[in-house]
Length: 209
Image (tube, rainbow, N blue to C red; front, side, top):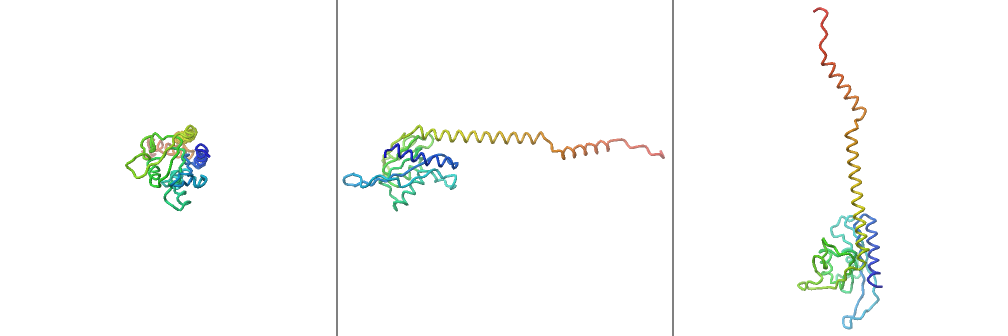
């Protein structure tokens, strides 16, 4: 399988996340052990983890797709080092996830759409290539970039429209409540008005005056 095929797996995870109300970002981790001496593969590459965003569902600030996938991969390999792993993710990782890739010693990260507000593997920062750190790793950007970006655009567009509809509905209900007086309230107001009018009338002269 090639990078695009693995990225499509990540897109599947992103779509599942979006269906659950999460921001649609997905990730998969591919394990490919290599002989350190010859640099030849020791086994066929295989997907050992996959995940979508879970931040809202788990109420967890670390619930990003690639973070969850790397944690699953470490559990699968029973090791914290992911040195023979490639992480595929539909959106460029943030500082937190790029930092975890550094800590896990991943071999490579492949991402789809760049993130102009938080991208840490080329857009705003280059954590993968910072030689001050004790590990650097390869990055391949823009794989299925348009498809990954479009999925996010559609999600946020739909969410904005839903919020606008909800706001409009709430406003209309408030206006309706302000202009519509319940019948019982009308009766009370009529009674109070009548009572006030009666009390304002001059007193009848007494027959003895």
